[in-house]
Length: 184
Image (cartoon, rainbow, N blue to C red):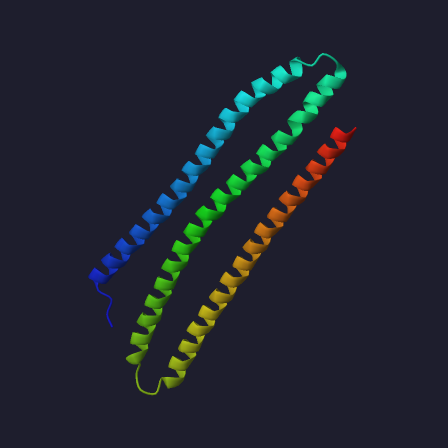
C-alpha cells in the first residue's frame, strides 16, 4: 500500500475539521461561562444594594443580627447554584470534547492498524515471526491505551462524585447552622 498525496491532503482536511469542531465546542463552553458570570454579576450588584438597605433599616443590634442571618442562607444557596451551573458547563463541554477526541483517536488508530496490516501483507517470506511480534505489540499498545482511558474515566467520575458529596455536605452544614442560629 502506498500513501499518496491525495490521502495526505484528505487526512489533513479531516484533522482541520476536527480541530475547528473542537474549538467551536470550547468557545461555546466559554460563552456559557461568560453568560453565567454576567448574570451572576448583575444579580450580585442588585442584591448588594437591597442587602445594604436591609442592614441600614435595622433599628437595634438584634435587628441587625437578624438581618445579617437572613442574608446568609440566600447567599449560600446562590453560591451553590452558581457552582452547580459552573460544574454543568465544565462537564458538558468536557464531555463533548472528550467524545470528539475519542472518536478521532479511534479513527486514527484504525487507520494506523489498516496501514500496518496492509504493509505486513507484503512482508517478505520467512518474516512470519517478526510480523507476529509487530501485531502483538500493536495489540498490547491498544490494550494499554484502553486501560488508561478507563482509569482516567474512573478518576474523573470519582472526582465528580466527591465534589457533589462535598457540596451536599457543605449545604447541609450551612442549613443546620442557619436553623440553629434562627432558633436562638
